[in-house]
Image 1 (cartoon, rainbow, N blue to C red):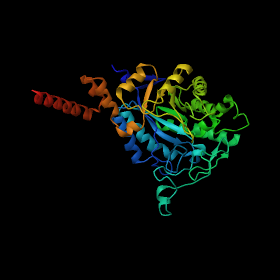
Image 2: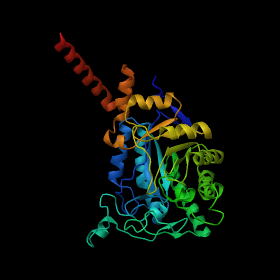
Image 3: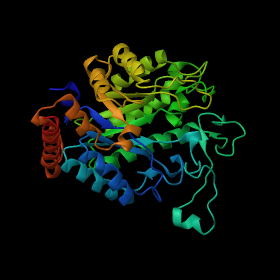
Image 4: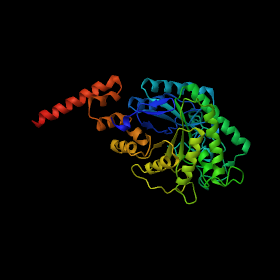
Length: 381
């Protein structure tokens, strides 16, 4: 059997294969509530054969949203629409996760396809427009002088306690929604990553300065979430393994962070990179896989690789070579929601390969392929 399509277990949860849909913001919610678009968007990946789906960055407070159109889990009314998605994923044998997030200084930005705040007064109530002040570890903006990013106000210790409790409350709501696992977002230049990196953190208290101090608040959030998240369910953490900025967060820092997360009960590190303005990171096929390999090997913790992984053989090699335990697809999954079933056929040409299709369509696809093969054979004769 292909290693990519072998099961993987974390605590009491087993993924049917090692392919995961990475969390991808859709900026399509109103008041943080999932709707039919989110259902259709995520359900198609279960039909396409993915072993797990992670719901996009889901804000733990209204002020923690990247934009006013983000999903949230700060109130009970946001539970039921997510539970509907979870229930459907389960019918297809697909595990469900949700990424809990706070955007920090990158909050209250325009919906990306607008690129600016140009909503008319008539549109604003229809799209749920909101605009609010932002916070961060220090009063350093993402981009100085930007009209897109605001200058954050430095959080007090009491406010940090409140945000930690908001992560806890969101995790408890995720449990009520039935999610199989949660992922704490500490990557891509958002709040927890802001605390980790000297690029965004110039604090002079116990949460700034040394690497140990800068890790203190993110680790306290993970610890608090792990304490309330059921012991039999996994907890993942997403990191940016490097900032790609001189003097910023490095792979060596991520190894230390990963080891500390493992000690707190994190079950897997989702390894990405970047997130701050000015980052210089060479991009190409599988460009973040070496980062996953480094964290997995040196921190001794399971990892998930992501980043322009497009070919079935490459994904198979990532697992076979020990670079990661899971492979996540983002943009490739959007381009081809059926990527796993196509990859399975490429890696395994036997009849068993069609078993990963939903039962309602697998035999039809098999018959289609058989008819095409027979036609090619007849024409060749």
